[in-house]
Image (tube, rainbow, N blue to C red; front, side, top):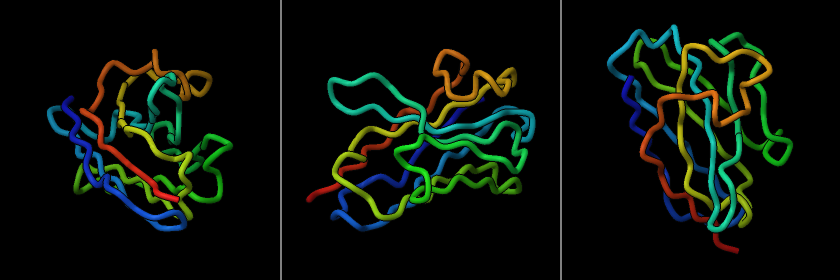
Amino acid sequence: VQLQASGGGLVQAGGSLRLSCVASGRPFSSYTISWFRQAPGEEREFVAGDKNNSGYPKYNEAVKGRFTISRDRPKNTMYLQMSSLRPEDTAVYYCAADRSVIGSTLASRTAYAYWGQGTQVTVSS
């Protein structure tokens, strides 16, 4: 599966952005697609994911209540709606996909074989 992430940009603190991840090449519905981010000098960390669109998404505690993940099946697209953005949200955001993710590995970057190219999000104070 190929992933194309977009929607990043420069925004002031308190603002909003919506990231998109378009999947192609394989049946979209059979993959778990999650979002990760990597700030300069930091490890890549889990942001949000919903195993096989179960309806029970999981979020990093740092973004809970501010970010929302959703999937548009006809468009083969996963979204990350980000609100109340903070300077500490500044990072390159990646979408990742895999068919074999289970609940306990949802937040583990090593569980995903397919990655998008990343989109930069910069939040100014």
